[in-house]
Image 1 (cartoon, rainbow, N blue to C red):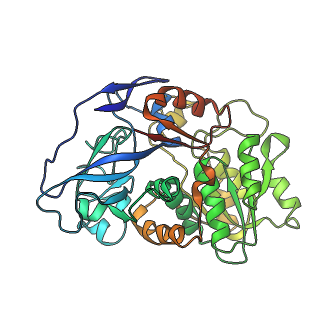
Image 2 (image 1 turned 60 degrees about the vertical axis):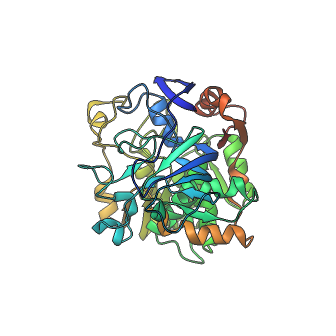
Length: 377
């Protein structure tokens, strides 16, 4: 089958690899209909992780079940399904408590597994024609048959729940003001989720014009940090107080106002400055314990200079970590079906799998309006 294979930094190729097969009675094989390129994939693509050549990318996947293991009870051939990027067992202590992003079974020695991602277990990615799904009864979310809402449903694999998760971590409530740093796919989903949750005003911070335009189209207030300190811009529009809540949808590959180089802690520190005393921060943006491309020795070991004194002084609360997709995907799916949510506004390009190499290049360079790419094998 064809699959997107990592070759070296800034290079992927669509190559022939072995088609997956049933390896356990709880497996299913899914014929992939849609798979998306994620900003997290770019960390590997750019050589900013320990990913080795040969890994098949792709943790945002949906399709049609083609083969069912003998132990699977709730699924059948022909079912249309979308899978959380988290690979989870469903029965370990973390899964039982709802922390499926930190499953203790699927990746021995490390809490959490994912398809096609470095250090996240042996699970091959779904930027391919077929995907093996383990613990399928638990990991597959059924969808209505047909092709309706295809580009909405694919976002249930990661970025829609992750954006919502950022708001959940920050405990966004109706009537509150929210600052979302980053207007990439997850940032736009966080801003959208804040509005869905009833926020009265949402600020979207970025410097890419196409992204800020998308944010404005959904009702957020665009803040271009290239034009001035974003915290000060937001305070000017909140009577000098700041916002009630804040979301970091950027992570460690951040660039500060007035700088042309990475400053990994800049978004965290900007949020500490932006959010009012006793507010809360949600941090779904990725931070890593090891970054070979970090700008200094501390950053290379995941150690950042964060304004912890100001965080404490203001009595701010902060929630962090990757999304436990199954906490949210079912009711977000139902919101899509009922017409209450349409997250596909963020999708800028739908392309055949064969164009993956070009799509990665353009998405990484933030050119030609690339905000979110869906590939169709």
